[in-house]
Image (cartoon, rainbow, N blue to C red; front, side, top):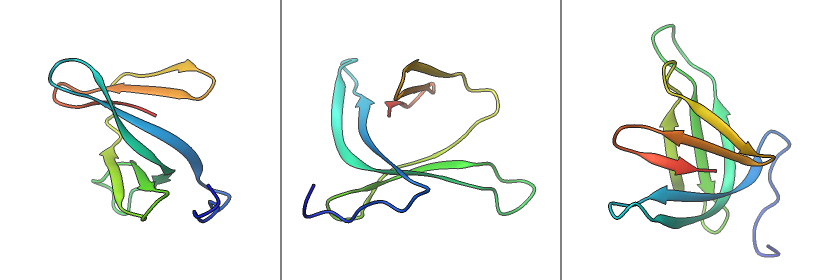
Length: 88
């Protein structure tokens, strides 16, 4: 990690995996996760993961009120949407 920039205090370093069509987990990369607050009354919180390599967006996901999120280990968050699943 010597070539990457250290994260600000409000971000954590994460490994991102997505579930592919064969129901296997694909490694999407390592980055820094941030939770973004809503900007208006009709918007929701978002989880954003930016690549530690080039700063590109690896994940931008709205936090849905009726979606079940599970903490499965000390540092593992699982989300399951009908069309999208990911692990942080």
